[in-house]
Amino acid sequence: MKLQSGSLTPALTKIPLYLSETYWWAYVHPRAIHLFERQWMVNLILWGNFGPLRDGALEALGLDRQGSTLQVACVYGDLTAQLLKRSVSGSRLDVIDVLPLQLDNLARKLPPDPAANLILCDSTAMSFESGSYDRALLFFLLHEQPEEVRRATIAQTLRVVRPGGRIVIVDYHRPRAFNPLYLPMAGVLHTLEPYAHDLWRHEITEWFPKDLKVAEVRKTTSFGGLYQMLVITV
Image (tube, rainbow, N blue to C red):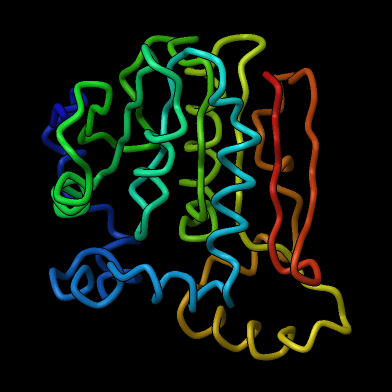
C-alpha cells in the first residue's frame, strides 16, 4: 500500500472549515475513529443497511472488469477492503481524503497491497489528469458537504472519470411520507448533519456542471426512500 500526497498546496493542507466546525466529532478528533470505526456501529447508523448499500455500490461499479478506480473519501467500516477484494487482478485503486488522520486509519485496516494508493487530496481540487479513471465511488460523502463544496466535488469527479466510465453515488434521500423513520431522521439530520437536508430537497443531478452532458443517470432508492444510489455513465 502506498501513502501519497495528492499535490496539495499549503492552503489546502489545512482542514476545511466545514469539517473542523461541523464534523470535528465524527472525523477530525482522534476519538472519533475509536468510536465510529466499528462495523456494527456503521451498520447501526444506517439502520442495518450498510451491507446491502455497500454491496449494491460495488456491484454497480463494474469491478469484474480490470481498470482504475477512485474512491472519493475514506469510509468507516469495510467498504474499501471489500472493494479491493472484489477488484480483478491488475486493477488499481486510489483513495483520496483531505484528512491525514482518516488515511492513516484506513491504512491500518487494509493489508499491504500495491494496488491501493492512499492519497492526501481535497475532493474539490483533484490534481489528477482528466479521464484518469475508469470508475469512481462516492459513498455517503455529498450529504456532509456544503453546496459549494458538493458542486466542486461532483465536477472534479466527473472530470477525472473517462468518457464511457462510471460513477456510483450512494447517499441519503428524502424518505416517503409513510416511512416510520421520516420524523426521527429529520431530527437527526437537522441536529448532526446540517447539509444533509439538501439531498431531501434536491436531486443530486442539480449540482452537476451546467455545461456538462452525461450519457446516462440511473437512480434507485431503498429502505422506504431513505437511501439513493445513482449510477452515472459519463
